[in-house]
Length: 171
Image (tube, rainbow, N blue to C red; front, side, top):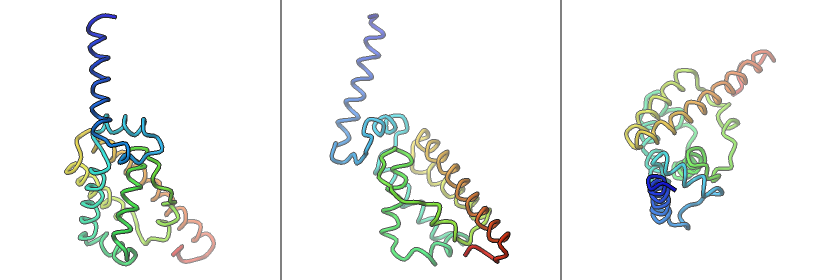
């Protein structure tokens, strides 16, 4: 094997060992630890950073004049909600499999429209850029955009079906 390939191989192994040493196996709550470690390496994300992302993002949401009232009316236990959202984003961003909920049914009854999704994404993008390294921000933003689109489509479809059935709203 040429020296450059041996060096690259040993450097990659060394970096993997450093990453694994930095992450205590007991702290890595993942059903797919190898995949999670690879995503952590590629994105610079970890559970602590995702926790900061979620908490800072929801601090912004709670203060927002458009989104704040929607959440204030529905979220009574913020500690529990934030814990759930950290598990959700850990599953989404790091493939840990920690979240086992069903987000679509929880969002369909919400009184939200396109403007709410646009604001949610604007706040999420800004928070991700403030908290995460560039690769991590890009990674979570891409996923947030897909999630927002999926939830928005589901809500619009629920409204369409209720309108067709002669009901005024799915709320």
